[in-house]
Image (tube, rainbow, N blue to C red):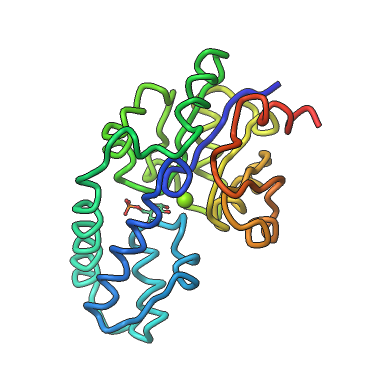
Length: 221
Ligand code: G6P
Ligand code: MG
């Protein structure tokens, strides 16, 4: 029954969600805007430019900068972020993820990355995971980012899977909303209260208990 598994990247495959937070916090400080972890939940899953706009609004500076200045700021955040990726190595993959990907490959079930990040291909290479994914959805190939379902629907379509037989795995509220809007089963990684509130079918505290058997069980229930 299970036809494809679609993975978010940051915060699901490894801890890059934390790197994004550190890099945004640094940029925000340069702009005189304070952000904390609670506010950061709003940034998870959304694109670089949208995140910047959200931070500027939060700081009451939404109209203070030109489009060109904003492009420069987004680039500066990305340099902060990319410098944190330097130390990335295969052992940084979250527990259970590589095993799950190997089991999916063995079973002939495609694994897909559905992330808003333009850094995804580079991160997958550094983690030595590229060949375990059938497809990485290019974020610019769809009109809308999360919470719209576009990235997940595009991924399923590419591998010929019907949404009702797909499972999406996400750590962000915007991502869970996107998976449900795509008509798929949503597995949340992280806070049960936060992710169930937006419709996650099941929430695990971390990736340890993700397995092919567990995922298959969700579709046959
Ligand atoms: C994901 C992350 C966000 C990040 C976005 C864009 O959605 O959850 O935190 O801002 O990707 O990533 P990028 O690497 O393209 O700046
Ligand atoms: Mg994420």
